[in-house]
Image (cartoon, rainbow, N blue to C red; front, side):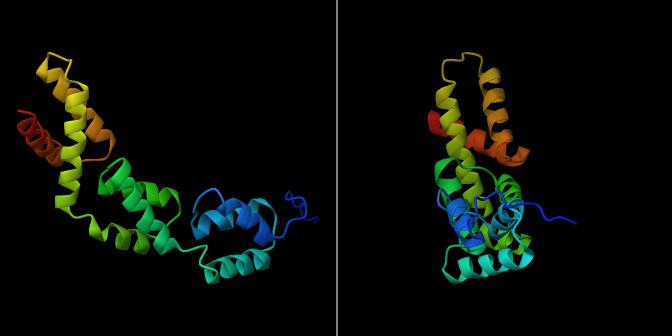
Length: 162
């Protein structure tokens, strides 16, 4: 059986991985999948992963912590949505749980209140209060917040607006 030709122009697996890591951080599994696309052998891939870990360039725990911190400071979402996003980056479940350990229900509610306040201000031109609240509810729902959290956030944000 003929082996597929490398599509990397002769670059080593390590060089290909470095190129892939340059624009942004990646998880171990993402790099493995990328190198697998380049038709590197399992041995080359594992050596490269080990080398990147030793160099501190590949660290799923740091990736997950940084991801959660950045996401909550730029565009807050629920723990549920963060978990989904980290799974999408192939982060192992135990690392996801550890990274989400600092996001307690108080933090989640505070984030939901901040998001609700933002959208209440954005939709301030809508005179129908029911429509305004429906739109804010929908925005919070798309960020993964549950019904109870949304309702409490709406109450607190509305109280803060007055």
